[in-house]
Image (cartoon, rainbow, N blue to C red; front, side):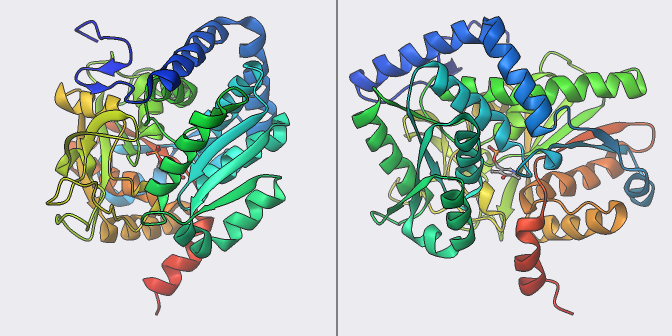
Length: 395
Ligand SMILES: *Cc1c(COP(=O)(O)O)cnc(C)c1O
């Protein structure tokens, strides 16, 4: 972008706030990653797995009925829900585990909240034959029993974390601790474009396939570029992936849909760009939701994949320079979009992705006919159906 950035920083955001020892290891990982990124064999291996195992390229789908009903811009979906395992996370998990394998590591360490990242990572480890240790807060282990069983079925070991609040934040701390002790044989594979450098760069690069495909597919279909791209933002990996291909297309507006949950109070949402202030959490500097005492706040969203109290440093930067706009979507709006998309197109979206769909519906009316919007449909909603029907649409 316009100013030359210090390695590992996006403006004032990013960096690696870890011990000197771990920093040296992460620098080694990055150096090797940069080499492999250009290596023909590594690229070919990744391309074959994406094609034959994951099901890439995923389609770009024009929502005819939804667009007509909404009465505005044309809405297109980048169908990341059609990936093996049902979401975009497998894009960076296969990349990270392949990297671990090429680095000669035997074990992959990961954290998980609701279980989506843990499942995708366990899948990639089963595929590539590495040991997998997933750290998960005790509260989440109890809530997500079926995901724990699935990870175990895939050969992963699920480590129950009973320190602190016993949720995602504590699982990340425990995973880092284990990585600091065992890095000679292991690689920590983080679940989004967060964490110390080089994770935000590596995860974004592995997700950038989404943007490259979507841009080329749209050009082929329509002969130009869309007017807007919309993606939901938790840590920000699916958004960073689709945004990456459009960053230099000045005419394309980029929107990140943040979870506004049940309101604007601290503890009621997970909209870190809107309500966060600069601070260091989990080894990187970004916008962090904080309570009155300056401690990371409990983040909340009806979509558990979005409730992280910070956001990837690149998003904090894109917000600061005004290249992307971050907008709030409430639980209620997301739930309504969940139903709308199911009814109008026969596609049940993940509650996370429903945040992006909800904003796209608003934007479509604002932009009006003749314009087009590409939405990153980050995942499928099978995991959410029971919860949504029990809690919200009982009739
Ligand atoms: C985990 C998850 C997200 C949120 O992660 P990002 O890093 O913000 O993309 C979004 N959608 C789905 C389906 C997820 O599983």
